[in-house]
Image 1 (cartoon, rainbow, N blue to C red):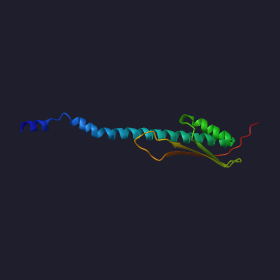
Image 2 (cartoon, rainbow, N blue to C red; image 1 turned 30 degrees about the vertical axis):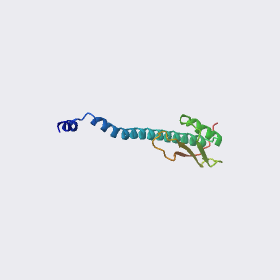
Image 3 (cartoon, rainbow, N blue to C red; image 1 turned 60 degrees about the vertical axis):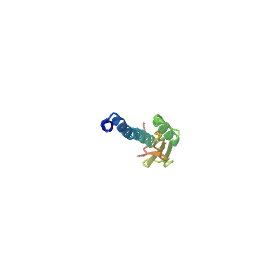
Length: 133
């Protein structure tokens, strides 16, 4: 009977069991924060690239120039799957122009697999013709 009491009072493995129960939750929380940070970064870059493209389209650049400007602005996140849509393609002075940028974000964490997350960025501006003498 005495040895059973000694075994029940022994708590040498308690901290190991507690760590084994809490560690997976902590790992999931850290990985989730990293994924959210990655997605938020890409949303910010895509939105900034759309603004740069809208500014370039508003001052009279062609669609190919706008796409080049957007790709240069989004170069830090990779432009492999970057989609740029400029509407309208033929612009006149005083007309609104919209640049929409879309990019899929790969999920890096191997624990969580979502179908895919897409970042959308859009910016609009008025097309102005500037005459310089």
